[in-house]
Each structure stands twice: as C-alpha cells, then as structure tokens.
Length: 83
Image (tube, rainbow, N blue to C red):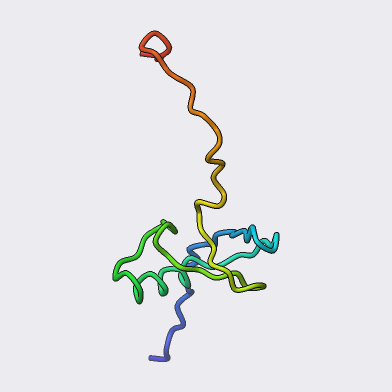
C-alpha cells in the first residue's frame, strides 16, 4: 500500500503588534506551541508567558502592550444585571 499523505491541520495564526516599531505580523499557533513547549513545558492559546520577538526590531512582544491600562471599569450594581 502506498504512503498516504495526510493533510496538515491548520490551527490558524495570531496577529501580533510591536509597539516599539509600529509593526504588525502574524505567527502560526503551531510555532507558538513549539516555543511554549520548549520554554514552559505546556502549550495553550495564551501568550502571557511566551517570549515572542518582533520580526523587524527584535523586541519582546507582550499581550499587555495591547491593553489600555488607563481605562476604568464601570461599576455594575445588582439592579443592572439581566437576571
């Protein structure tokens, strides 16, 4: 029986942004999982403990750079809840 080539599963990619050089780039999740497995020993769809460097300038990309920490969370009272 001849060898049957299996299709490689596509797990997608994530778009990353380097604040330092204002550069957007994509990285496949499989590559991120390889990095996670080598550095922290487990894999997942999180980036907060994965060190990914910018393709252009080499600085470390962090999910925290995409979060606006100056925004305040509005107070929600019990009467505002839908249940």
